[in-house]
Length: 425
Image (cartoon, rainbow, N blue to C red):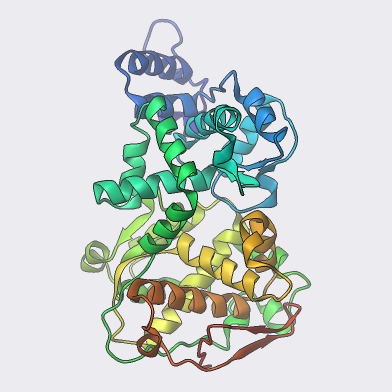
């Protein structure tokens, strides 16, 4: 309730609960104090996040990391703007954390904790950081969460709930384990992201030739100078293609559900069994549920890419009426792999350096046309399906033929698929 009040009216709102003014901030401070006495870490982190508390060691911790030749990325958005490459005062660091850490306020103090522990570990155990140039706090949290999900046999969002309840000491131990086993945990996370299908015949991989013309009339007539700017405009206007929401409903008929936005936030999960039994394709309440999750995505260009991904999924399931994916389709994961594949397909880019170039890779992806974006969404889905079925599944998942996708509007004359994804237009 206090979080809702702070979002709606601010921390200075007088709640009217006393003869003297009693603000939301004062009540949150009381909650924070009582939770601290009881060691209720999830409540401590939530109230600290709402109160915008800043760790007194934050600025020094960031400086300690930077002087040892590393750079820092906060949040889960792969954006160059999320990088910290020079010492900053605490309030500016906190501003970046608030901007890129999503809607779960508990991630703000958790990010600060991780940064402080990284600064300690880089001094006491520098070997843990060998080969790491950019310390991506959001990704480290994701690795910790994936390890918890595997141990507890729960979903990532449930594992995140467990993580925010851990004491700072336990979080530090988890962080050490993640750094020590970084490479193997990377592979484990890949396996956890894999998808499994129930379908005997090969999947018909299709990219709609109308993908470039999904948006505004002006972009259909003549491609925009910058697809990135076009996505920013369309995303800011919450523009969706015609028939978008019924097609999302159709996608949900072919999977366990969808996760739109931060996959560690349980509020972003749409369960197919529940929603399809309660709502119809054209029902307004269903459209509002999907729209609400899309609107929670802060970056408009990323919101638009989510819409493009859902449209491509709709095209694929239309061509494969018997396709059934046994897991939730997590758009963050699907799009992340699409960005990676698109970046690695460009011959001048080295696979080994992808982790250091993610900001550039995402910016490059935003500059591709919707058709190229849809192409790599299809390739990413195929990658996750092959990952789920292991090697040798390619004959079942798709026919292997060499293929090139031409797109003059994106500036890429041809984008090849080294794993030979068959695309039928």
